[in-house]
Length: 327
Ligand SMILES: [Zn+2]
Image 1 (cartoon, protein in one colour):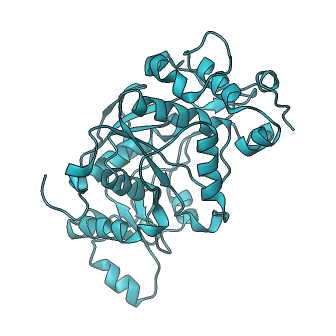
Image 2: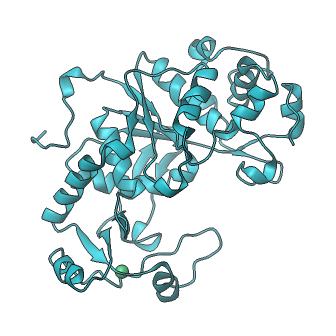
């Protein structure tokens, strides 16, 4: 590895580390809990470390006390972590350093497009697809940012996608995503300032020595972008395991419309964490039926490949069985 301010101090890091990365923008719910449980077990079952990161860079939506709430929820689930949590809002200088590297290598360009510019210039996406950036500003180079600044024109920094990096997901298998036609050049630094999610998580996971990322499969399209950033920053990428989400009875991703399934609501209703963990463990194929179990007791039973490939449908009846009535 070449020396870089972005590289961690390797000798102090364990060989294997997973991570929990709650975003305090919304309270943690049953769907988040399932992903955290899988991520924690995957690391701990191999004797690895677990790192905690509070993803709070989306500042306007952060509620005060939400980070403490997220940590409380994790502890309630019986999930622990090693060392102090990393807090993204305290790490801005690291993201700025990474952006500098991208600029020095002319891998990004300033983009002045607004959301509506992009929507009107791009061909209409099919349902469920994201809008592909049409390349309106791709003719610019890094130095053009000076002129834009003089003119008082705000801009984002966009990463130039020149190729697709296929990857093998530990759960979901081979992934070939045509980034050029599914998203295109992507923002790494937001118009108005601050790193975009893709840049921040890459810088953080590398600095924290994370070797395996377990997260919901809604983030599969993020992974080829992040792999491009790992390479551009000369950082070693982790392995990825994207697992299916928890959905409501209507098949849609678990959200407020399905009622209050926040962990704090379950806790307030007197649901025991072991009851919820047992339900989640059953949903992952580690128990024959939902019965109370502590997270730690699942260590010898953990198998990533036992998790069904389909989303887990959380019904009101399943919640009733663990003593919770959805309101
Ligand atoms: Zn643009």
